[in-house]
Figure: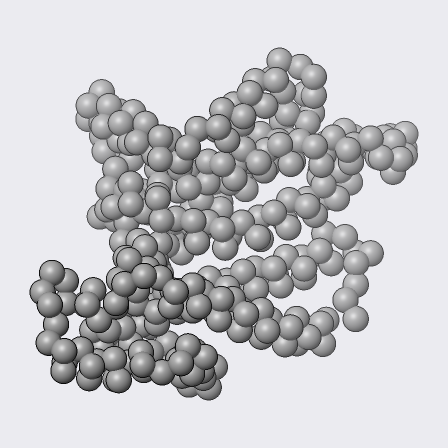
Length: 314
């Protein structure tokens, strides 16, 4: 197991290099001058602009700029500074925590609601309950996140407060602690909940038709034990894969949700940095997201051995 983990971490290095180089090239190719964007509407003095370009290596070839950045990350853990001389790690620190809280809230909602509804639909396949759940998930997939966010803000954030007098679901900011993440967490997880519900339903329905399930039933085991210990445990393998990969998607795809609910997270910062062409900030955020993907996939692979003892890593 230890050798497998080390091998996977070594394999992650070219993935990290490739992803950061790709995003570095994309940001570099964007039109506009980052030094001019730094001054806003004012026209920068030519001499000052040239000094800043030399300071931030903007006159160097692209690959040399990338080497300066990636060598600092790999050898010193230094993500560099933005064009206002603020360390990128300092920019990401507080904002990353907000996005992580949002993504974990969405992931928990996705796992609980998605697996629960999928289990319910699989056990009542072909009945009215199953049809209703499938129709609901289809509606959730079809409605854009932007629409879902504003509708829930109006109904649960504004109207519910008017009817009950209780501010249960705050509509903006993080001033209400963990409650601030409930509404945006559901909006962010909405599409994933729908897909996970359908995946759980399909996976469990196929598992319940397997020969070993019929054998367990024929041995006189209770239906709860057959479903819980034999059926659901094996059906969880594709679900764990989906959840592990989706953690990175939730963190990277939070731009719209954070904008709707005025959350100053990493997604909001990523959008601003792309607009200002701040390569160190953009690549730093992407680097962290790639690491999240890599670690999440590694944890998923290790969980396989827990869910299915037949899987062993040499």
